[in-house]
Length: 145
Image: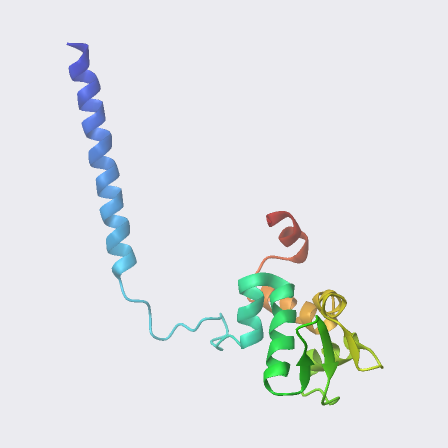
């Protein structure tokens, strides 16, 4: 007769679990508010902000290098070197890319990428996302991985 007690407890927990699952599914199926923007201030995310959220400072550095290469402002060689074609940066991040490459206009990609991850524009981007509540601070980010 003891098995009946265990069966009733199992049925009860199954009913509670199924009910909670159904309620969560109904809540997830509700449409989002049309007035809510992706950020608390209502602005859409920039491409660099989305890259930071997707992969951190290294992803922002990669995006800056690739986007400048697509615009034919940098040359990314298959040998692992980057060469400056147009030395005028359009924003702070692009000027940081050019500064990280150096005055000779050519450098291996890994040191440039490392320098960009700690550059001021990337830290400012991270600070804006932390202030908006979309990213965690740098100290906590190091321990999350």
